[in-house]
Length: 255
Image (cartoon, rainbow, N blue to C red):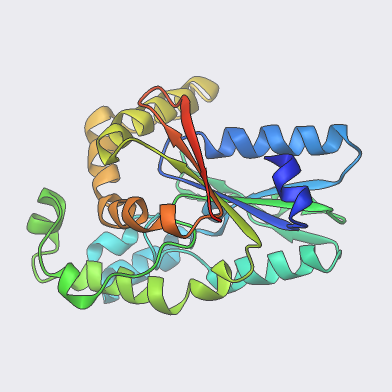
């Protein structure tokens, strides 16, 4: 995969995978390999650019309560992500936010990431290059959360509009996209629970989500995740098809 990025002259190499698929681990491994070859590598995540808690709470009051929860389209500072990637591509020194998921807020600026320059920028996220849905696709709820907490469809319409309006500018900055394709959305709750347990083990003094809370949290991502599963195999430059244990069972590339 590193050879693929270098051969394609992809300064910004994107890795997309649904929650818990291993995209962060893979990005870190590729960065380490790049550095072993004498390259300067920077690793960023779309999660770094979550809106702060105060801004999300404002959206929750003014638009829909579900927007107070981080993650879905419409809860990222897309303009800042574009600015950071542009500066990295230009070889400039840049700092970018880090987000503390257990505390659900950005870290203080003194703890932000920094790069003086980078030969390879690895950008990972769970819905990179996923297109918006058509209006007719938004009518029926995809799960109990949408049925019970978004009965009029305002939340999913807001997220879908943001996905189609704001994010293409960010997608256009990604030179090449690798998709970690799971066997189906059904594996995601378990993968995300394993991820939560790992975060809790690393920081035992902080309270992680319970399994029930993780299940509800994953429900917020289901609509766009299913759209990604439908559309990204035809959009990504390469797809690694995974089984439920995250083992690669095949590799598909675009001609």
